[in-house]
Length: 294
Image (cartoon, rainbow, N blue to C red; front, top):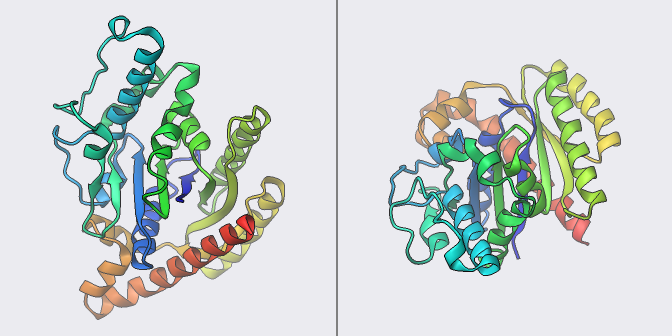
C-alpha cells in the first residue's frame, strides 16, 4: 500500500517542488512505483516533469471536480446538479482519473495541476470537500509504493485536502526565520485537524534546503532541532546546499541525477553533492517510516 507524503511549508519559495521532483525520480531509481500529484496552481512540478499541457489531459482540478459532482449526484439526484466546469479537459466521458495519470520520462506517474486551482476557495468551499483528495488517492494506493503531493504554500482547501489525504508530511525550510514560522504553522494546522479527528498525517521531519555554507548549515540545523522538539518535526541529517545544479537541471526538465549523467566534468562535480544528499534523504525517509510503522 502506498505511503502518501505531502511536501509542504506555508512559506513560498523554499524549494518544495524541486524536492518533490527529486524524490519522485529517486524512489523510481530504487525500484518503487511512484505517483506525483501537483496541487499547486503554479504548475512547476508538472513543468519539471516535462509534461505538456493540452485539453485532452484532465488536471487534478478536473478529477476533484468530477468526484465532487458524483458525490452530489448520489446525494441530490442527477437532475438537481449542474455540470462541473472541466476547464482543462475537453472529453469528460469515461474514467477521468485513468486519463489524468500521465507517465514521465523519469518513469514516475503524475497528475498535473491547473492554473485555475487559484479558484479553489470557490470550487471546493463545502465542508466535505476536504475529503475529495483522500477519496481519489484511496482508489490508487494499491498501485503505488509512494504518492508524493507537491502542495501550494498558502492556506486553502487544497492544503487542507493534502493534510487529510496524507500519511506523512515533510516540511522544507530555508535558512531563515520565515520558513521556520511556516513549519510551525503547518504543525499548528495538523494539530487542530487531529483534535477534530480529521487527519492521521504525521510530521516526518524538516529538510534544510538551499543553505550557503557549512557555518550556516550548523546554525540553522540547531534552530530546526529546537523547532523540531516543539513540533515533532526533527530535521533530517541530509541537507541540500544552495547551488546552480538543481536550477540548471530543472530548466532542462530533468532531475539532478540525470543532469549529472549527461553533463561534462564540471556539471558532474556540481551535481554530485546534491545527488549524495538526496540519497541520504531518501534513506532517512525510509528509515523513519519503518520505525513509525514498526
